[in-house]
Image 1 (spheres, helix red, strand yellow):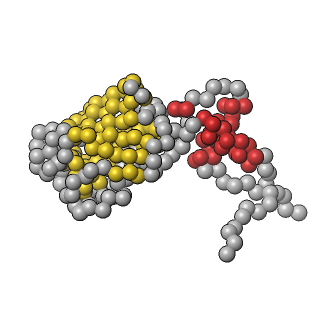
Image 2: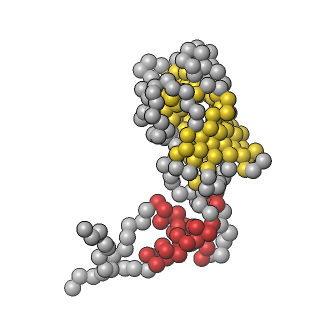
Image 3: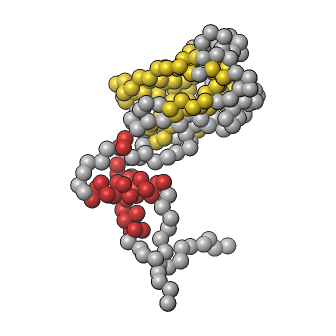
Length: 217
Protein backbone atom coordinates (compact mmCIF):
# COMPACT_ATOMS: atom_id res chain seq x y z
CA UNK A 1 0.00 0.00 0.00
CA UNK A 2 1.49 3.30 -1.05
CA UNK A 3 1.88 6.11 1.44
CA UNK A 4 0.32 9.47 0.82
CA UNK A 5 2.50 12.24 -0.52
CA UNK A 6 2.03 15.99 -0.60
CA UNK A 7 0.20 17.40 -3.62
CA UNK A 8 2.28 19.46 -6.04
CA UNK A 9 2.49 23.10 -5.05
CA UNK A 10 1.86 22.55 -1.37
CA UNK A 11 4.37 22.75 1.47
CA UNK A 12 4.72 20.22 4.29
CA UNK A 13 3.54 21.55 7.67
CA UNK A 14 6.35 22.76 9.92
CA UNK A 15 6.98 20.68 13.02
CA UNK A 16 8.74 21.85 16.19
CA UNK A 17 11.91 20.50 14.63
CA UNK A 18 11.24 22.55 11.52
CA UNK A 19 10.75 25.75 13.50
CA UNK A 20 14.06 25.14 15.30
CA UNK A 21 15.75 24.66 11.94
CA UNK A 22 14.09 27.80 10.59
CA UNK A 23 15.59 29.79 13.43
CA UNK A 24 19.04 28.36 12.74
CA UNK A 25 18.67 29.14 9.03
CA UNK A 26 17.79 32.75 9.81
CA UNK A 27 20.71 33.15 12.19
CA UNK A 28 23.14 31.48 9.79
CA UNK A 29 21.93 33.69 6.92
CA UNK A 30 22.58 36.78 9.01
CA UNK A 31 26.13 35.64 9.71
CA UNK A 32 25.55 35.45 13.47
CA UNK A 33 27.14 32.87 15.74
CA UNK A 34 24.97 29.85 16.58
CA UNK A 35 24.70 29.26 20.34
CA UNK A 36 23.64 25.63 21.03
CA UNK A 37 21.76 26.35 24.28
CA UNK A 38 19.44 28.86 22.61
CA UNK A 39 17.76 26.33 20.30
CA UNK A 40 16.30 23.21 21.86
CA UNK A 41 14.42 20.48 19.99
CA UNK A 42 11.68 19.05 22.24
CA UNK A 43 12.12 15.41 23.24
CA UNK A 44 10.17 12.81 25.19
CA UNK A 45 12.44 12.93 28.25
CA UNK A 46 12.38 10.20 30.90
CA UNK A 47 8.95 8.83 31.81
CA UNK A 48 10.07 5.52 33.41
CA UNK A 49 7.68 3.74 31.03
CA UNK A 50 10.07 0.76 30.50
CA UNK A 51 9.85 -0.29 34.16
CA UNK A 52 8.13 -3.65 34.66
CA UNK A 53 7.91 -3.86 38.44
CA UNK A 54 6.62 -5.42 40.50
CA UNK A 55 5.39 -2.50 42.58
CA UNK A 56 7.92 -1.80 45.34
CA UNK A 57 10.78 -3.61 43.59
CA UNK A 58 14.22 -2.06 43.98
CA UNK A 59 15.01 0.43 41.23
CA UNK A 60 18.53 -0.16 39.91
CA UNK A 61 18.43 2.27 37.00
CA UNK A 62 17.46 2.00 33.34
CA UNK A 63 18.05 3.37 29.85
CA UNK A 64 15.31 5.27 28.07
CA UNK A 65 16.02 6.52 24.57
CA UNK A 66 19.45 8.16 24.68
CA UNK A 67 19.31 8.73 28.44
CA UNK A 68 20.71 6.55 31.22
CA UNK A 69 19.42 6.93 34.79
CA UNK A 70 21.60 5.55 37.59
CA UNK A 71 20.93 5.64 41.36
CA UNK A 72 24.09 6.81 43.18
CA UNK A 73 22.82 7.17 46.77
CA UNK A 74 19.89 6.19 48.95
CA UNK A 75 17.19 3.61 48.28
CA UNK A 76 15.04 3.88 45.14
CA UNK A 77 12.00 1.73 44.37
CA UNK A 78 9.64 1.19 41.43
CA UNK A 79 6.18 2.68 41.76
CA UNK A 80 3.77 0.65 39.63
CA UNK A 81 0.66 1.82 41.51
CA UNK A 82 1.28 5.59 41.51
CA UNK A 83 2.66 7.86 38.81
CA UNK A 84 1.87 10.70 36.44
CA UNK A 85 0.93 8.41 34.75
CA UNK A 86 2.25 5.16 36.22
CA UNK A 87 4.94 4.03 36.60
CA UNK A 88 7.19 6.29 38.65
CA UNK A 89 10.06 5.72 41.04
CA UNK A 90 10.21 6.73 44.69
CA UNK A 91 12.67 7.54 47.42
CA UNK A 92 11.97 5.05 50.20
CA UNK A 93 11.48 2.76 51.92
CA UNK A 94 7.93 3.87 52.71
CA UNK A 95 7.68 5.62 56.08
CA UNK A 96 11.46 5.84 56.48
CA UNK A 97 12.97 7.42 53.32
CA UNK A 98 16.45 8.92 53.31
CA UNK A 99 18.35 11.23 51.00
CA UNK A 100 18.47 9.64 47.54
CA UNK A 101 20.39 10.70 44.44
CA UNK A 102 20.04 9.95 40.72
CA UNK A 103 22.58 10.52 37.97
CA UNK A 104 21.39 11.21 34.40
CA UNK A 105 23.60 11.10 31.29
CA UNK A 106 22.96 11.32 27.56
CA UNK A 107 24.75 8.91 25.19
CA UNK A 108 24.48 11.46 22.36
CA UNK A 109 26.18 14.34 24.15
CA UNK A 110 24.88 17.56 25.67
CA UNK A 111 21.37 17.87 27.06
CA UNK A 112 19.18 20.19 29.13
CA UNK A 113 16.80 19.80 32.08
CA UNK A 114 13.66 21.92 32.13
CA UNK A 115 11.35 20.25 34.68
CA UNK A 116 10.37 17.17 36.64
CA UNK A 117 7.26 15.86 38.37
CA UNK A 118 7.29 14.91 42.04
CA UNK A 119 5.01 13.90 44.89
CA UNK A 120 6.40 14.59 48.36
CA UNK A 121 3.96 12.47 50.31
CA UNK A 122 2.66 13.73 53.69
CA UNK A 123 4.98 16.72 54.01
CA UNK A 124 7.43 19.11 52.42
CA UNK A 125 10.83 17.90 51.23
CA UNK A 126 13.87 19.45 49.59
CA UNK A 127 15.80 19.05 46.37
CA UNK A 128 19.38 19.62 45.26
CA UNK A 129 20.06 19.63 41.50
CA UNK A 130 23.54 19.90 40.03
CA UNK A 131 24.31 20.17 36.32
CA UNK A 132 27.86 19.52 35.12
CA UNK A 133 29.66 20.36 31.90
CA UNK A 134 32.73 18.18 31.97
CA UNK A 135 34.31 18.63 35.39
CA UNK A 136 32.79 22.10 35.80
CA UNK A 137 29.63 22.71 37.83
CA UNK A 138 27.40 24.52 35.33
CA UNK A 139 24.58 25.25 37.79
CA UNK A 140 23.36 24.32 41.26
CA UNK A 141 19.71 24.62 42.31
CA UNK A 142 18.12 23.93 45.69
CA UNK A 143 14.64 24.45 47.04
CA UNK A 144 11.50 23.03 48.61
CA UNK A 145 9.22 20.30 47.28
CA UNK A 146 5.67 21.14 48.37
CA UNK A 147 3.94 18.37 50.28
CA UNK A 148 1.14 16.28 48.83
CA UNK A 149 -1.61 14.92 51.07
CA UNK A 150 -4.49 12.50 50.60
CA UNK A 151 -5.73 12.51 47.86
CA UNK A 152 -2.13 12.51 46.62
CA UNK A 153 -1.10 14.16 43.35
CA UNK A 154 2.03 15.24 41.51
CA UNK A 155 3.49 18.74 41.33
CA UNK A 156 5.83 20.23 38.71
CA UNK A 157 9.27 21.59 39.48
CA UNK A 158 10.47 23.94 36.74
CA UNK A 159 14.21 24.53 36.74
CA UNK A 160 15.95 27.90 36.60
CA UNK A 161 18.39 26.82 33.86
CA UNK A 162 16.24 25.08 31.21
CA UNK A 163 18.46 26.13 28.29
CA UNK A 164 21.89 25.51 29.81
CA UNK A 165 23.63 22.52 28.14
CA UNK A 166 25.19 19.92 30.42
CA UNK A 167 26.62 16.41 30.08
CA UNK A 168 26.01 15.19 33.62
CA UNK A 169 23.07 15.70 35.97
CA UNK A 170 22.55 14.82 39.64
CA UNK A 171 19.13 15.03 41.28
CA UNK A 172 19.01 14.64 45.07
CA UNK A 173 15.77 14.34 47.06
CA UNK A 174 15.88 15.07 50.79
CA UNK A 175 12.76 14.02 52.75
CA UNK A 176 11.34 16.48 55.25
CA UNK A 177 9.75 15.76 58.65
CA UNK A 178 6.85 13.29 58.44
CA UNK A 179 7.38 12.51 54.74
CA UNK A 180 6.53 8.87 53.97
CA UNK A 181 8.13 8.76 50.49
CA UNK A 182 8.90 10.97 47.48
CA UNK A 183 7.77 9.87 44.02
CA UNK A 184 9.61 11.13 40.94
CA UNK A 185 8.35 11.03 37.35
CA UNK A 186 8.76 12.67 33.93
CA UNK A 187 12.26 14.11 34.06
CA UNK A 188 12.18 16.68 31.26
CA UNK A 189 15.58 16.22 29.66
CA UNK A 190 16.23 17.07 26.02
CA UNK A 191 19.23 16.36 23.80
CA UNK A 192 20.88 19.49 22.41
CA UNK A 193 21.43 19.07 18.64
CA UNK A 194 24.95 19.68 17.44
CA UNK A 195 25.34 22.84 15.30
CA UNK A 196 26.19 20.78 12.21
CA UNK A 197 22.95 18.80 12.50
CA UNK A 198 20.92 21.98 12.87
CA UNK A 199 22.49 23.48 9.76
CA UNK A 200 21.51 20.37 7.79
CA UNK A 201 17.95 20.78 9.06
CA UNK A 202 18.01 24.43 8.08
CA UNK A 203 19.17 23.57 4.56
CA UNK A 204 16.28 21.15 4.17
CA UNK A 205 13.84 23.72 5.51
CA UNK A 206 15.15 26.34 3.09
CA UNK A 207 13.98 24.12 0.22
CA UNK A 208 10.52 23.82 1.82
CA UNK A 209 9.98 27.53 2.36
CA UNK A 210 10.65 28.22 -1.33
CA UNK A 211 7.52 26.36 -2.36
CA UNK A 212 4.25 28.27 -2.82
CA UNK A 213 0.59 27.20 -2.70
CA UNK A 214 -0.72 26.41 -6.18
CA UNK A 215 -3.57 28.48 -7.62
CA UNK A 216 -6.68 26.84 -8.94
CA UNK A 217 -7.80 27.88 -12.42
